[in-house]
Image 1 (tube, rainbow, N blue to C red):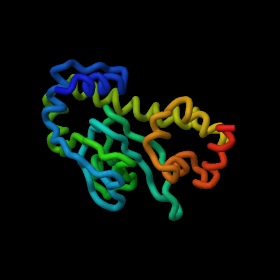
Image 2: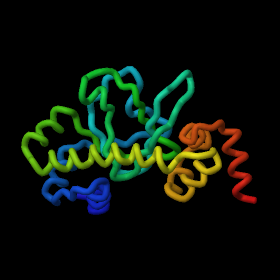
Image 3: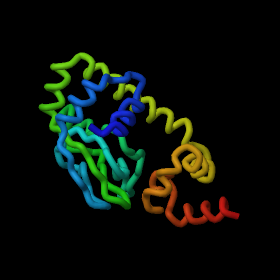
Length: 192
């Protein structure tokens, strides 16, 4: 198994799964290559699969009043899914799509995931810790990526520079909740 990916998975939360659990998890997944600007989870469609990003970057977003709102990014080692589809078997609201580069994903269906939870208490504890960590990350983002548009941009520059390099200006602007034109003005302010 990929040692780098296992290390990234261990860093996603406080609970550190054993090599055995990581190998069980990764071994139950199917590797998929996805082209740039491709939808992985689409609005209005049921997709109860669990994904683990192996290479690349994926943006997570929804549409509000005909405007895309990017609220996060998956980087290598990130596990993501549609909560509505996975938990309620309902159509997805949150969408996931690749950015400027192709990605390599690992995919697992819900039935296999639940079988792993039933089989291993350690796997279940890891998933609970991971879920709690993701909720904490959402709250932390609210506390860090706030203030004026310039302050939000500087915060992303300081805390998540890999995002700026990997996404289009349109996507970054939607993450910062500003127009692409305003983002260009902010970039010019910082350069000079």
